[in-house]
Image (cartoon, rainbow, N blue to C red; front, side):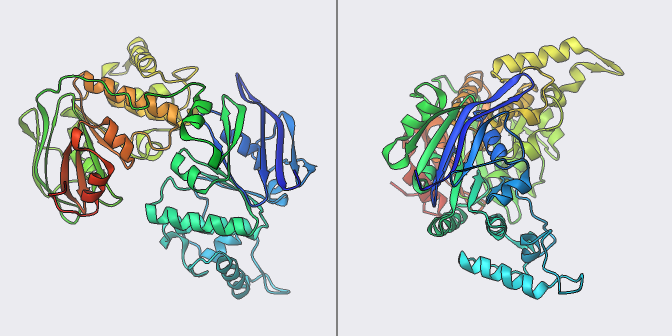
Length: 501
């Protein structure tokens, strides 16, 4: 295997009470895009943190170009040509592109301590030209799009001589056009002989840009497949240890009376004359392209943003929703699209997060009824199958799928009549997706009205009883379950007329 640039062998890593990696391995070839796939908690991040010098392995060996190396820290990883581009970008928004690329390694004028900005900008320009990037070295990073900032992270990695790049969920916050821009850059990196380890839950991306796929499960190596010789179903079976024939769990049940009605809702420049109803036990999907107004609609209904005009009714009665507290008091819950920033207090426990909206149930004056608190939390840990050693576990230590379940549990504790789910399976693995679909179906069967906003059309099509498609702040079309297909949804989402066949 002369073309192998990286080999990780027999990697073991233990944490208190947890065997995070057990005999894990990975081979990476020169100029290859190699996907690392597995459910949340499979050990992918731990393995990459060992490669990047953030953790050290308890056992095992790492070889670069056939030579055994000891990676003792981040600087050691950089010295061996390894750079990790994390999902949360590490850039200084108030500094220029060139300043970010060479942060801590600035050019100084000979004999002086002053930064040689001209030379630094020139080097940054050359690096960006090599990838065909139309970004100026003097641009302020905070003014750039997320996709452009990601490109700066790639250039920054190349500036330290990286020939092995790790990309962790690089498309999570990108639009379709920006994803294409990233893929073009990845192809250019391949042509230059740069090797890439690509972590993503989006199967369609893996089949588009990767050469091989390594699957991990429960901290162990399961197998490596040549991308063009495998299938989605085979990879899913490897990931979860069983076939997922019924990914979309949806029960047949009777849909009840109207629980939520929105009439002539307007917010200047954001929402235009929105009208729809939601019934008890119904899953109402809301589809549309990025910027169509889906999240903005959810924020208005939940009282985060105020609307200019219109009427919101709950069970036939007009309600005034000027704040999230008003929404909660009227039986509305919202699972936001960004669980880490908007849905959870990451440093606090599962128990703290689940009970945050219902503190009055077990706190009376200065007295805290711990038994009631624990009963509430343990009920949802059991009901939603939240994998945790304890209700006192910090939310930040949970996998993405389990974090999402905690956010859902928080709102279920309020006994909502209406639950709005904004991108409910974003950033979770396929096994956790199936579990979340099961939870959504269970809630609908219990009579909760569900509004599900999603960018994943298979999710919308398979889980919704009815779908509203938004375009530029308006409802462009409405489709019943038996009318749903990707072509009709995209017709409306791109501004098509309502007479589509």
